[in-house]
Amino acid sequence: MRSNFVNILLLLQLVFSHSIFAATDNVALKPIQVAPNTYFVKGRPEIGSSENQNFISNAGFVITPKGVVVIDALGSPILAKKLLYEIKKVTPQKVVAVIVTHYHADHVYGLQEFKKIGAKIYAQNQGINYLSSETAKQRLIASRQDFAPWVNDSTQLIPADVWIDQSRVLTIGGVQFQISRVGPAHAPEDLIIYIPSEGVLFVGDLVFRGRIPFVGNADSKGWLSALDEIERLQPKTIIPGHGAHSVSPREDIAFTRDYLKYLRQSMSKAAIDMDPFDEAYKQTDWSEYDGMPLFRAANRMNAYNVYLSIQAE
Image 1 (cartoon, rainbow, N blue to C red):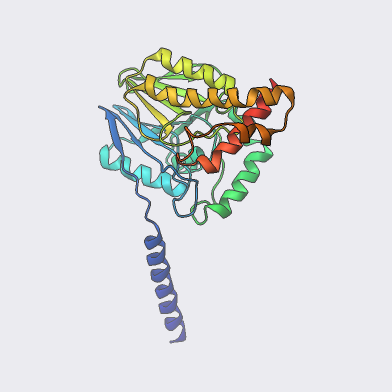
Image 2: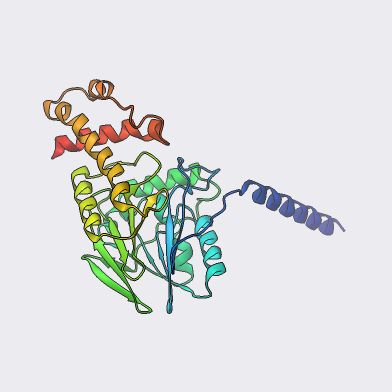
């Protein structure tokens, strides 16, 4: 009798915890179709948190006659599961490949869910250095706290099955995916993926829309060169790593380019002359960018990182 009572209590606790879990899960993924066979989901213009499940970046997928190719894996395993669920609504084709634009946490913490279903993962080989770094280890430890319960002890960093050391064409179901190395730029391991038959170019975090870019430890000079390479491809549509898709690539690339140039222009003299960063930052007119999403969270750090990188050039 007592064991039955305990079992009932455990069942009630399970039901209650499940209802709370479901009630707090208010993050929905809504695929946006941008070409006949190409879709993407748009992350929120926010800092990653438990509330948004680290849904702050974009991911896309392309349907071919021989399977689905996903670009980037989102910022938590739960988001990857949701993306897989949304893909099933659109096509019965299985996900056969995932191409990683770069190994930043908000783009790769969902990789393990694609690995579980047998998808082959492709990434630029400089990602090997990141995976073995103390930075990656500490970032995951912090993320398990910051994004709990969505990122937790079972969340792992997943290496690529195929490490790309030079630009190549991946053909799946007769559809070409032109994968180009463009790093070091935003990250050492940046890739861009162009699908000529769709006229769509996935550019990862080389282009930001609707928010201040995240510069981090970027090579700003290399990043500007990468933007030139993106323009040379003349895609009809670009899918950035953050923000809405663009059907006017030249205009929308200009925002990221102008921001990077302004950072370099504003910080160059102080960096070269070894003047204090704080003074240079205070003397800079940020009015064009102040008020944009994540300005206060990212701009000062961006400027400081560019200040340091110019000194190292």
